[in-house]
Structure formats: C-alpha cells, structure tokens
Image (cartoon, rainbow, N blue to C red; front, side, top):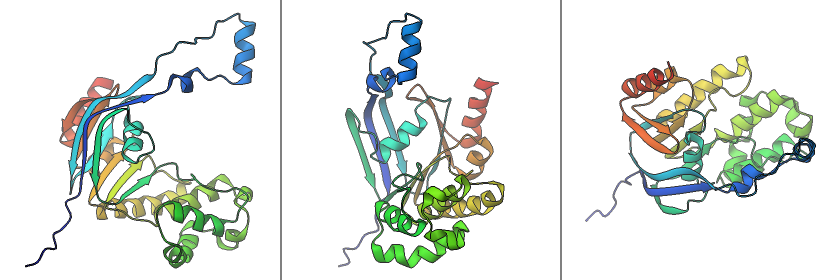
Length: 253
C-alpha cells in the first residue's frame, strides 16, 4: 500500500494576540530628550503596550494568493512578521504547513565590511540554503544584480542601488511553498525594476501559498485571488479582490 501522500499546505491563525512593548514607543533620542526638557514637557512613562493583532483568526490554503491591504498602521506588516516568526505572539496559535520564505528586510544580515560575494553566502545561509546550494547559485545572483567586478568589493563601498540589487538577487534565489512578500516589487531603480518585477511574479506564481502586502491596488487585483482588509489589527473584510479593493478605496475616497 502506498503511504506517500501529498502535503497539505496551509496557514492557520486562531485567536492570535500580538502586542508591541510600550518601550518601543516611549524611547527617545538624546536630541528629542533635550528639546523636550527645553519645552518643559513631561515624558509619558505609563504608555500601554500596543495591541497590534486582536483575537486574529485567518486560514489560508494551497492555491490561494492573498493580498493584505489597509491603512498604514492597520497591522499588515505585523501580520507577515508574525507568520515569519519575527514577532512573537502573546496568545493564540499559528500553524503553518510548508517551507516558509519571507521577502522583507532584504538587507537583513548584511555585513557592510564584507564583500558582496561573502554576503551572498552569509545571507543565503540565513535564508535556509546549504553552502553548496548557495555556491551553485552564486554566479546567477551576481549576473542578476549586475555587479560585475564589484562583487569582490566590500559592500560599504556600494551605492544604494547596488546594495538593493544584490539584496534582491539573493533573497529571490531561495524559493519556498509559502511566500510572504512585503512591498518588494519596487526594488531598485527604474531600469532594474522591470526584471525584478518579472522575477517576483514568477516566484509568486510558483508558490503554493502567497501572502502579499502591497499598496499598489492594481497589482493586488491582478495577482491575488483573495483580499483581506485590515483595520487596527482586525479583519474587517475578506473576499474577492475587486469587491474588497473597491470597499477599501471607497472608504478612502
């Protein structure tokens, strides 16, 4: 009897609550502290923790391309980072079946004193690849990033455009069944954006599950088959892309 069964890919969030510590919002730079004292302002010491996701329930299954939309501060990026395990939840549960790859904070883990080539290896390992897998993709990453001989220079000497191209090329070299994507379709300058966009669309097409945060509603409607509208850490609408986008734009119109 064949016991091999295809994996069922899914995301299940049940009664999830996530808080930001008030210390993040209460922190002041030295400059802010000086000006505050000059204006005789009292510093608020008893800020409450911010309730970023509130009793959050969401299920996503294989084949779904889910766009997450909402005002700034609605909880969109927080949701992605909770799914990626970057932000810990206070209560509830998150279950995920499938290899997760996140596309945000593209330069996370970069060592500015190391060369581009060294950073390909470091970042690739951080993304879950083996050394041999990274080496097999190295030249393709260099070519896509259009760095040429600069790949052996310390990345602190790179322009911002070169750094973004390298980060994007590395991050998109690793694929997963569950893709979490946050505003990376506009990576790089205008000349780089076209091929970056084509590459991202191809990756998203191959994923079993896609969760996409993007402010471009035209792309959301073109790529996604389901859209979730967030407001203050809660789901206020969930359904067909055209319907939910129209609802969102209507509220902002």
